[in-house]
Image 1: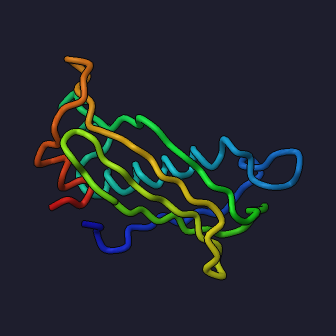
Image 2: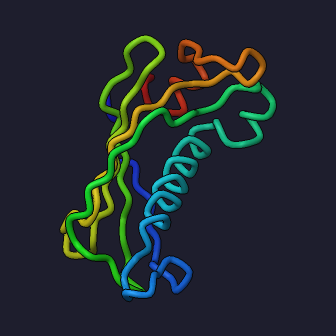
Image 3: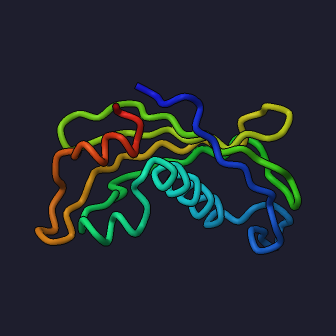
Length: 135
């Protein structure tokens, strides 16, 4: 079900850091989200499409595991794997991988496609399925 190895690369900057000299916990969520938006935008479902259709992704639940420290100026790769899509609910797994191949952080999240007009989750549309690599 997973598209071919989607990934997003980033270098950790000062704005990502905390006073302990490693990446701030909130920065992890921001970078994981950047990677997801990069992926769906490249697949034709960016913010312009969300605004046009009034339908977009919504995170329902997430869990993050910190395995290895990430520090200033490290280059990391963020991967994305679609685990399943059952009805209106789906699950993604994302990893932040250090240059040596070590998984530094793992995120699993539950999400759905949200209709901004009805304020409800909806079944995945053909455009959304394409955007997340289901077709």
